[in-house]
Image (cartoon, rainbow, N blue to C red; front, side, top):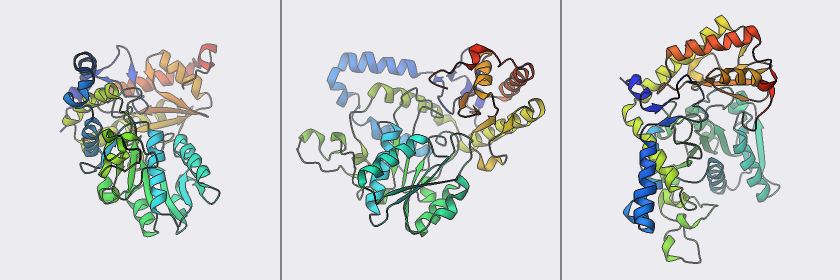
Amino acid sequence: MTDFSKTRAAFHLPEGVIYLDGNSLGPLPAGVEARARHAIESEWGDMLIRAWNQAGWMAQPKRVGDRIAKLIGAPAGSVVMGDTLSIKVYQALASALELNPERKVVLSDNGNFPTDLYMADGLLRSLGKEHELRVVDPEAVEASIDDTVAVLMLTHVDYRTGRMHDMASLTKKAHDCGALVIWDLAHSAGAMRVDLTGCNADFAVGCTYKYLNGGPGAPAFIHVRPDLQDKVRPALSGWLGHEAPFAFDLDYRPGAGIERMRVGTPPVVQMTMLEAALDIWDEVDLDDLRARSIELSELFIAEVEKQAPQVTIASPRDPQIRGSQVSLKFEHGYAAMQALIARGVIGDFRAPDMMRFGFTPLYIDENDVRQAVEILAGILETRAWDRPEFTKREKVT
C-alpha cells in the first residue's frame, strides 16, 4: 500500500495553504531544487558544452520518456519528451492524417482543451478546404464516429468538469471504423492508471506540470504506438529528429523509432527538474492513488452538498467516469475563488462560472478537504466574495 503521509512530506507546501490546484500546476517536490542546482552548477557550470555527452543531456528526452511511459501504460521506447503540448498535438495530428490520407475529417468534442482545437484548426486550414474539424458534445462522440473520420482526437479527462471518456471503447470503435486515435492525457497522467497498450492507442500526448509536478513550463511528451513509429513522417522535421543530427546534412531523414518525434534542443534544466520530480512515483501504486483520489473527491462532494447549497456540482457524480477533480458552478465563481485563495484555499476558475478543485492524494488528505469546504461554505453564506478586490480579473484565472 502506498504511504500517502510519506509522499505528502516529499513536497514543499506553504504553511497555512490547502492546495487544491495540482490539476493545473503541481507543487514543488523535495529534491528538485538541489537537482536543478547540480545541473546548473556542476553540469552547465563545470562541464560546459561537454555536458551534452558527459551528463547525458542528449539522451535525456528518451530516458525521461521511458519513465513517463510506465505511468501511462506504454512500453519503453514509445515516449519522448520535448517542446510544448501544443507542438505535440500538432505533430501527432499531422502524422495521423498522413497515415489516413483518403479521409478528411478530424472528430473532437467541445470538452477538449481549446489549444488542441486551435492547433487542429490551424493545421487543417493549412492543408486546404477539403479537411474538416468536426466538434460535437462529449456525449455524442461515440455516435459520431463513422467511416468519414480520419482521426479521433480527444482529451481523456475534460479540463472543465472532469468528465472522463472511455478510452478503450472509443479507441476500439474508431479502429473498427478505420480511424486513428490521439489521446491528450494532460489531466490523466499521474492522476490514474492509463493503459495505452491495452487500449491499442495510436498516439498520446500530455503535459508534465500538472499531476506529474514537473514545474511551470515543464516539457510535454508524445507517445507513438511502436508498430507505427517508423511509418509516421514528422511534419515538424527538426534537427534533433534527424537520423544523424550532427552530420548536418541538408536533406531531412527521420530518425529511427520515437526519436523522430523530437524537434528542437531540449530544455535541459526544466527536464532535469521533471526527472527529479518523477522519483516520487517509485513509491506510488497507481491503483492506490486512484482509490484515494475517489475517496477524497467523494468526501468533497458530500460536504459541499451538506454545507454549500448555493453551488451546483458540475462534475459527473459517478466517480468511475470522473477524473481527479471536482468542479462547482456558481454565478460569482471567479470572485468566490479569489476569496477562497485569500483565505488559503487554492483552486482555480474556468469561464464562465466554474470553480475547479483538484484532488491529488500525494499531498492532500481528509482534513484538507473538510477544512476547504468549511471555508467555502462560510464565504458563500456571508457573501464574503462580494468585494471589489475579488471581482477584479487577473490575466491568469
